Structures are given as C-alpha cells and as structure tokens.
Image 1: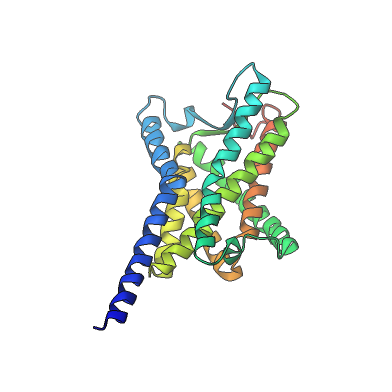
Image 2 (image 1 turned 30 degrees about the horizontal axis):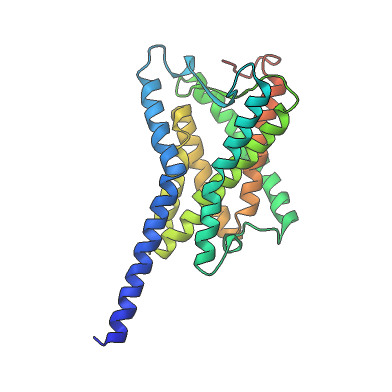
Length: 263
C-alpha cells in the first residue's frame, strides 16, 4: 500500500468515526437522553399502584406557579435551550460543507411545506387522537394533559412556540440528521427507518405503551414521506400543526366536552 492510499484510508476511517461520534453526542444531548428518561418514567408509572390510565403525563406545565412573569421567563428559556441541539446539527452540517438545506429544512418551498404539512397533519392528527383514546381506554396509556398553564395573556403564544420547538427539534434531528448520518455510515434503508422510528417512539414512552406505538408508526410514515420528498420542511410543518391543535385545543376544550380525558 502506498503512503497516499494509506493516508486516504486513515482519512476515511477518521471521517466515519467522527460522524459516528457526532451522532452519538447529538443524541446524548437531545432526544436519545429524552428516550432514556422516558423509559425510566415509564417504569415508574408501570410499577405505581392504580394502573397507567389513572395517572397523568403533562406536556407543558407551569414552571413557577403563582408567579406569571417568572413562569414566562422559564417557558421561553426552556424553548430556546431545547433548540440548541438543532443549532449544533446546523454547525456540524456546515462543517461538512453543506447546511440544513441538504435535509430540506429551509425556505425554498414554503407553500409546498405548509400545504403538504397540513394534509399530513389532518390525517395523522385524527388517527392519532383515536388511537390515544383507544389505548387509554384499554389501560395502555396515561392520561395525556397537553397543557396545564395558568390563564394568563402569554398562554396561547407559549403553547404555539412550544409546538413549533417540538417539531423543529424532532424532525431536524430524528428525521433529517439521523437518516443522513446513518446512511453515511453504511446502514441500510430499512435499518435507518427502524432506528429513527424506535427512537421517536422511545422518548414518548413516558405517555405509556400507546404513546410509544403510535409515535413509532408515525416515525415510519414520516421516514417514507421524507424519502419521497427529500425535505424535512413539510414534516416539521405537519408536526407543528398537530401539536398546536393538541395544545391549544386542549386549553379551549378541557372540561367542556365529555370525550376529552382530563387529569
């Protein structure tokens, strides 16, 4: 082997190792850690007397009860810091010589993203609600409380921002970045879909078995749509719309309609 070919081999190995390590670190700082935390919470819920359906999982709750301005500061702080891993992914892609544009998270096709996002949200949102109600009735899920914020002027804006933050974080990392990195590491397409979908289900496990299975199925669908469109944009839009409807809808309807479970 010549010196040149040896150097090329070492560079390739370093690039592969670096990409693998970057992926592990991004997940350890974000949704991989969330998946482990959700598993621990699920074990705690599963071993608590009374069954899963008698317990509640709150998604957006007050961080400083009785102190609205401090609560608002904590809410905005939480939203901003949750997006730091997305900034890290953007940096890593830039260092690679590309950008978030390579995964289709940009402003090139806004109407395509919003239009198809609304279509996907309508289908997934309705199906997901029906599945959740069925899983809870069967005792496989906790009661999901999308929000428990006080009735203050910033309640709806914070819920909308929280929904957008969830969508951007999850779709940029679990969909665009994970699939790209695993593909670069030589994983097959079925293996990358399985990993991404199980990861998505794992950090929803705190909601119960229904939360895990429902989000795993959503993960498979989103992977297939991402492969078809080559864009994270419409799927981030769909996710944001689903969460906005869930958060704001719960805030407006909780306690007013009989079919919506409350804690």
